[in-house]
Image 1 (cartoon, rainbow, N blue to C red):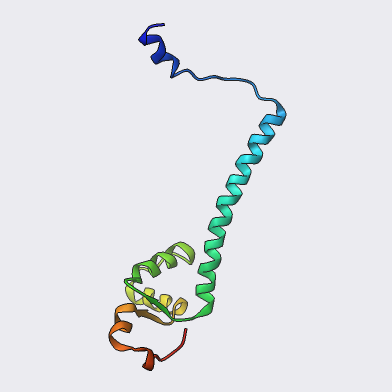
Image 2: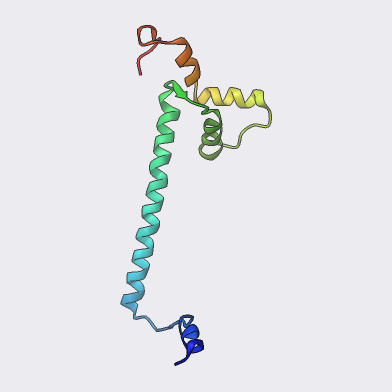
Amino acid sequence: MDGTDAKWKEKVVRVSKLSQEERDAIAQKEAKAFNDDLMGLVGFRQVVDVLFESKKPIIGHNAFIDLIQIYAKFYRTPPHTLVEFKTELLKLFPLYVRAHFCKRNFTFSNLPFVV
């Protein structure tokens, strides 16, 4: 066997007929992988729903873009105007505080709320 034969041998695809049991096993494996992925996504959706329902303060560092993404991906398409969008966003997240603001204005002795 010379070098050219070895090169072609690496690119060979083997095709074989599967039994019904083998096809069922592959289908079950693919369905399980799909369900595992789906449950991971559903799990994060549950976290987002808790955020929406809790109405607790959201404190974040440069998190405004994150809130926009959460709104757009898990709630609805954002309105076309900034004023409408701010109004809608405040309904979901009534208190959004920048971490920078907290750092400059609060100490543990004068926190306005306990999280």
